[in-house]
Image (cartoon, rainbow, N blue to C red; front, side):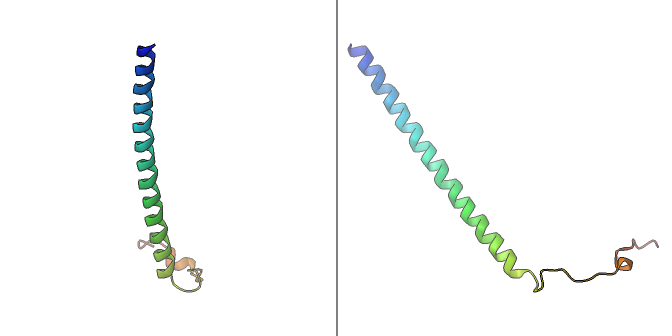
Length: 66
């Protein structure tokens, strides 16, 4: 009976450690997500007005050797 109790205590300790590691991983991932969202927001702010949908001539896209 004592051995079974010790085995359960060991499993519980490993489970708690794993849970702490997973929580830390989730916390770090959320920080990365927040940072990426801020970067996307900043990029959208830098985008020229009108959404970049300016009319371009096909001649502007010809390679230089033409």
